[in-house]
Length: 65
Length: 65
Image (tube, rainbow over all chains, first blue to last red; front, side, top):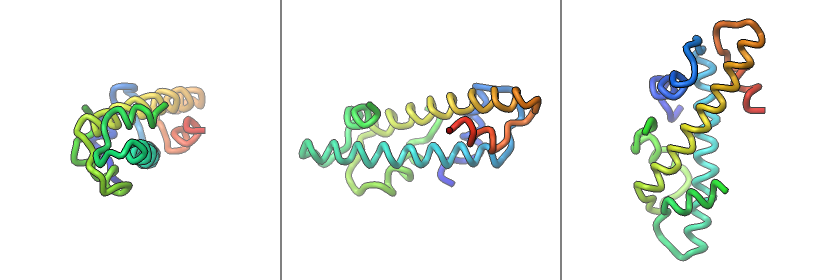
């Protein structure tokens, strides 16, 4: 798992005082990793289509649209 | 920012050998945090609707549907 339990608990902790099982934390982490990979893949294509060797914030924003 | 640059680089690094600007990394991190919060919020509502005090993996999965 890429995102640590403690980091996930920080994100979750801003939204609730409830208990969150470790499995739930892992499930959320898996989803966020997957989304991160998909957005990156799209942003890389956008940067390449513009002939750039560096992925910029604007590529991420465009990928999110 | 919740997710560290180094963790984000791990996620990004599986998808590309290209250079990724720090701002791009931060932009992606912000999006993932936001999504993490939204999913958590929804999962908490689902757990509450079932009278549970603990958010389980099944609540996260239901929130993702």
